[in-house]
Image (cartoon, rainbow over all chains, first blue to last red):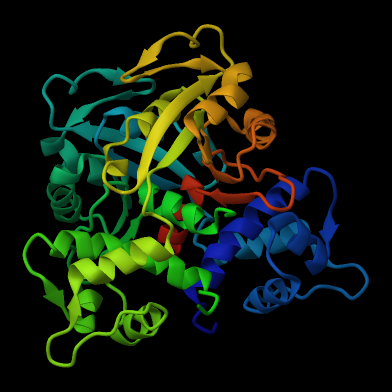
Length: 204
Length: 204
């Protein structure tokens, strides 16, 4: 398979969600309908879907379940990923109990904090564990993804701890960049950045 | 000024943060240094910065404060934006008190919920208000950006309420798409999508 551009991968995640929603009502969908449901222009939808093996049938469109399955295969979502969260403050707790992960390929395996006042407390289904248990817990749960939900000042330590525990994929919610060795992928979610992009598009 | 591509706008927010960090240590920076600090390739940095009036000086680079100021001007960040948050559960509370907004051009004006058990309670600096006070509060605070932090089932109602209150820019954290009229910009932060992109890049 050709190497798939990152922007296409990001849109695949959007298509997948639209398809899983559409699937409740119907079994086939055209690229124009995917375009309308997902808010992506039709030419781009067709270009993206060309990276998959699946071909639409003229006048009928794509089989929704088949197309969704192919996207899941490409995205490595055919098994569930176990996620560990560093930081059990408001954001970490919100993430630990985020209902939007259910059915999307992820489950939270464990939550960690280095504050003795929080360790041992319960945030819904999870008892907060000390960070020095991270490596053991990652191995025990087969966790592959780590989430940084600690204050900016602690973000690098959190990244180092995740890397030390063998995690190769990190989602960073702290409002700073972290350094990681080659071979570790960090994706940053910066809430202020999201707002800044909105500010640019604010009608004036 | 030429219309600036969305991807450039997104990178401007990253450059801005790198520049504000670099500014603590030095006064000038080369495009190669910006590239290294921000993790964006040097050719792309130069192409993006060409949208600004600022020119680097050969052998010296860019004046950091000047360049950051120009980016802020383009992004409309020269005044502070007031933000309202719908939903005072874990995620809404985390956002209401997110320390990463400070100094980035945003402040939370008010937090709303439709659960009588939560309305009137305090989440740090904010007393949670009933959603029927939204329109009045938006006008009173001059709020321009709304954040949806409610469960998926309530997201469309929240979007309708924000639009009804005159909000034109919405950041949606609920794991569903919402419909809004033309002229309203919605930016979606889907935490499962972020994880799905990471899963794709997971070393196998």
